[in-house]
Length: 467
Image 1 (tube, rainbow, N blue to C red):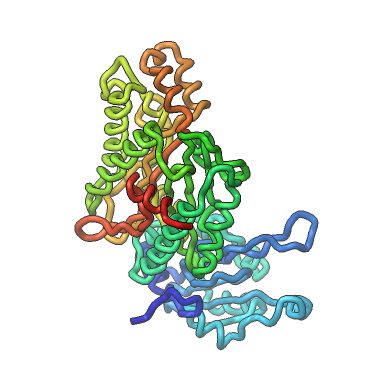
Image 2 (cartoon, rainbow, N blue to C red):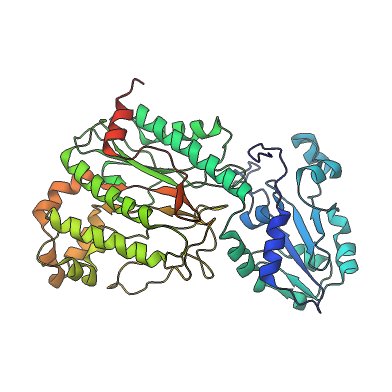
């Protein structure tokens, strides 16, 4: 059985193209091609220092190429894929080494032919296409330089087809995502085992990156979030430069995941800096875990995501009433007024794949932005069609004591009655809790790809192990 975890095994990306072609449904009376161009190396401003490189995801999807400067042309009539490597000047070869030969490129990538950039105009003339499908983000400079009639370029159809195609994954893609999730999970465990108060957050970030890199995941799927103490209530805190507080309620929220061959993971764990949850921290943590487990139990093909988000809101409303943080209303009233959003102001999940917030969640797919009414349930992501087998999504409820959010909501006169400020002050030092797993939708339910511990008992046991 072929394993695609090796960095040298050729990925069968032609499957992607054929899937896209079917969704593109090209006009058989009209000869057409797909043209796309990958990303180029970027330099730090006014220097010759290269910035870290990661190729554009749609280009990786169609070609498997992770290196910079490539183009691709695909003939929709013959299904032949022409890969065009960048032209490397001799001076650059001197500094950076020689590029792969055409023979090597054909061995590495699931394409049919290698042509030079100089031969691109001849190829386009030979194909004599009546329509050229491009993404609206594609650099089409090479087409213009080749004398292509710009009126032949269609910037609309390809995007929807690729986004729809990327919603569900082939088995080899799932192998890569599973690996990324497992290694990221073990990196989270390493952080639990090595965290202590008065460390700098960046020490934990460095360890997470190292644990990923030593297992073949050099690139992070997104900037790691290492948020301790009150910063755990800030959703996208990435400064990671503060000292971890030593107070009894101090939590560390780590939202981080590496990627393997551009396929990513998304995992969040929240744990006590001291190794033991305070009563207040434990109370909030177990509410969030209750929400996540309720959603995980219900996921399967056919489920609509708004129902899962509403379930999360419903449980949170009941629990915040139970512990006295919200008062003077029923759960339904609290949901209708929107006050739950003072503590939970993001969506409950998203697609994962070649991007951490993978396409397919926008416009055509599963988890697209919808709600603009500030008084409605905060369905940041709304499902336009039900979940399907081989989709990969996150489940990431949270509960936060964010001073800015609380101030915004409690300054509204008719909403103040719902907030028990004395009880909020009691829980404010907890900061925030988020628990996030990346899961695969199967025929009958889910396969949870995330293996990092998440019960209070298990987290405290891991943190108590000898370092």
